[in-house]
Amino acid sequence: MTPTDPAPAPGVTGHDTGAAADRDLVRALDRAVTGEVDASASARAMFSMDASNYRHVPRAVVFPRTADDVAAALRVCRAHGVGVTA
Image: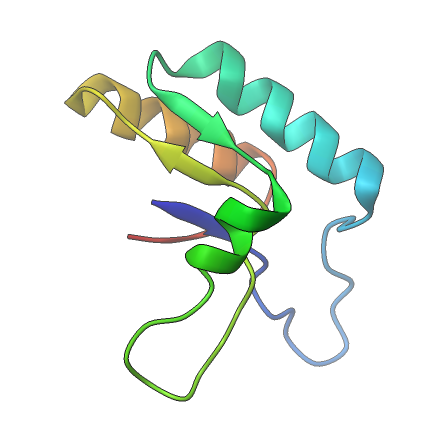
């Protein structure tokens, strides 16, 4: 599960995607889930692509342990305006 930045609609200002916003997101995810949250450059690079030609670097990678972790991570991402790729 990787939180990614959704593309804002034309003419709509998106959420802050700066370093401070990333730190806030990672802190909130750390508090919300019992699983691991990894925002290291290597984890983000490893989960930035699939078998397609498309590459999108996530803001963090979450390794949920339980269904409650998944629900908590989704709530945090929603509150921060961050899209999720599973």
